Image 1: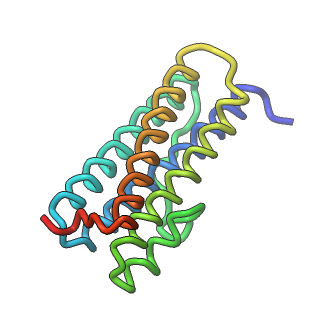
Image 2: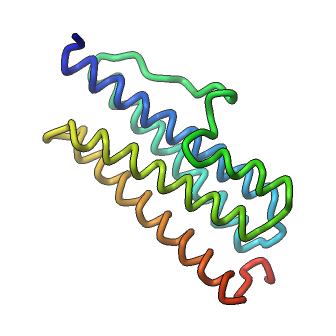
Length: 157
């Protein structure tokens, strides 16, 4: 059975992978939309996910563990982001936004699972802060998706 500190490092490394997935997903989305507004939103979220992964790596090292450097592309884009690939292939901006929302939903679930096992301290504060940012991102993606469903298309700059 793993010690609590080893489990915490494993959990943090899982969140690093989630952040790498999100970063890659948002970068993919940004490359495949014509709207400068959407591209800016997606690039911003990609940068945030990269920052989250960096913060989590520092926390793993502070805990005495070995941080994940990056995820393998084959293992990435899972848990929701995989839908992005097919959306991009069809050039459907609504589907791209919906795939981003699904990816955020999966990320939120991963963060909630880790939060349930971290009781207090700096690690919990860091994870909660990132989790709240991911919740806001998911809400923004949902808002964009709803706007598009109502005929308000953000890709028309």
